[in-house]
Image: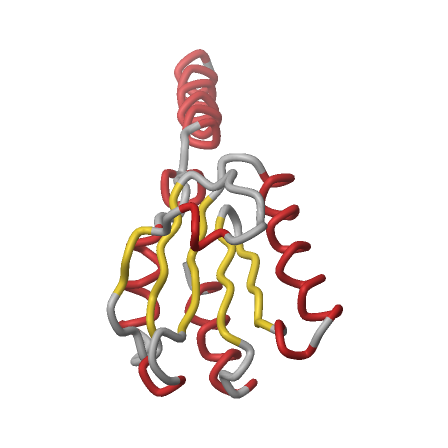
Length: 142
């Protein structure tokens, strides 16, 4: 009986410790490189990439951890999107609201935005909705 009790305690301890362990794939932040890889793996168009400068933010808040621009050549010269990562969700939401409100103010400034975990992707609004959905699906696979 004592051996059975010790076995039960050992099994329960292992179970509890396993449940407390970190699952790094869920806890790790997504990087801009992860997003670019996901887009490419999904067969989506990704041209040149460059680190965002203060000019790339325009009047938007510069609170991201990482920021890169990526080109989508089929949209024309110098068109594509941005990938921004954040440590603070309220900063991410603030930037998403900035892009979304621009599109609400004027169709000329419309862009697609995708929020997933710690990432915000903003893509030129000339991208067809079907293609936008493919980028969204690729991001949400991370």
